[in-house]
Amino acid sequence: MLGKIFLKSTNKLKYIIKTLKEKNFIEIASGYGIITKECINFNFKILNIEIDNNIYCSLKKKYYKKIYILNINLLNFNFRRLGYINILGNIPYYISSKFIKIFKKNNNLKRCFVMLQKEFVKTLSIKNINIYKIEKFIKEDFFPQPSILSNFIKISKRIY
Image: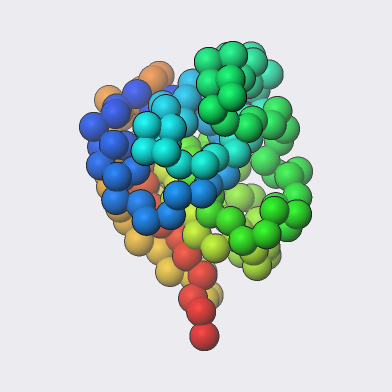
């Protein structure tokens, strides 16, 4: 499963989802669908991107007709073809830097709400980008438990 950790804590997640003003998202690295389920409960329109074929099949079966899901690598996805969009997800930490580069170079990506490693978030300083910490997550919020802490953050581009 590509070294992925899966979010299992729903209380913090429900709080985060409830506070989002945006209702249309691309959910990346969907995992077992804990974020997907909450988005459906709040009537969000979502397109899911999941690289793991087993998880993709499970999500497709579980949420048939409720979501549109693609079985592709998000690093190879052409975000420009969708117009202005928002991103939501629990990105595998080993591709965080690559994903941030994708976010920076695609003008149509408006906002990004993602889980990232706490230490990585501390190092983020990106020209013309605002970064807001929304919620802290502890090791026990995930399965399997990682050896690090996580932050759910909002990244948005500054408009001049």
